[in-house]
Length: 334
Image 1 (cartoon, one colour):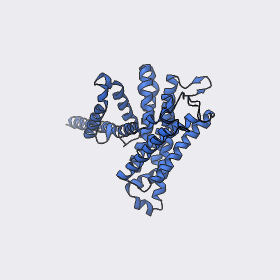
Image 2 (tube, rainbow, N blue to C red):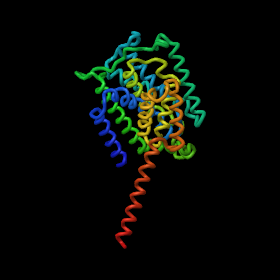
Image 3 (cartoon, rainbow, N blue to C red):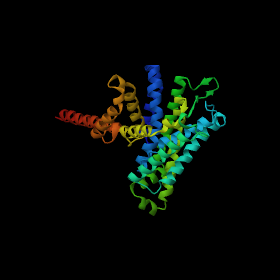
Image 4 (tube, one colour):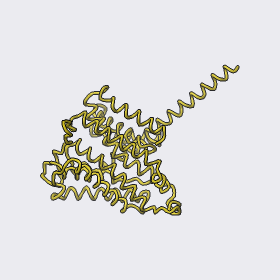
């Protein structure tokens, strides 16, 4: 990672670890924790969009597969599956999401633009309908409840602050992973795939395989988010992975900005704040109107999203400092 990435990560980590000291339990449990989980899932979408130029609307589905996997390997209200040790359940759920990502990559490896969006969306909707109708594995529309975060020794991870710190550590881990991956040879291959598939093939890479690898890696990220989301809600059901949730994640990723991985978390925080306090501003039935209006304003004012707006502000401040320093130096010279 570059020096700027390390400084940014250190600042974000410090802020997140100090947040419980300066905020209320409600803010931690209902806003910060949920924003971190939503940010992880949105990051998997944003990374694909930024690095290989494909917008996948199947990331919520992949997160849901991890959620169902952790439910089937844990105690649940439906009595389905087999309860497994914590490590086996978590690793198995993440690998299930990674495998789902690979399958999704195989399906959409030759597609780009609107065609990739439609293929991933159709697959996501098909899986949601299948989960709603299947009772032997997914318990149909009701899904599975009673899925709580486990206990590590004397630490109950379902407790508000313990679960928050679990989400913080997970978020920082996926951030470090994506920032590191962008600088590796594989990350450069992803960017070459985004810029020109034919040139990538001329260099000896197979573009289709590169797409599959990218989907598999972001599938692991979405899987982490899916597990945390299932523990946060203590349940998993088709409504948890429906079209409305998929669109929410898309809005989060674009509104935050796909130019930098941190944008997914910035967008998630803004979205959760609006969702939480919208009832104080407008009628609940008009929440989607408010989200749409804010989304349009952000995109019109800053095509790079909130993170792009922040960069522009920093650049303007640096420019002003340069101008002031130049004027000051000129006056001293006189």
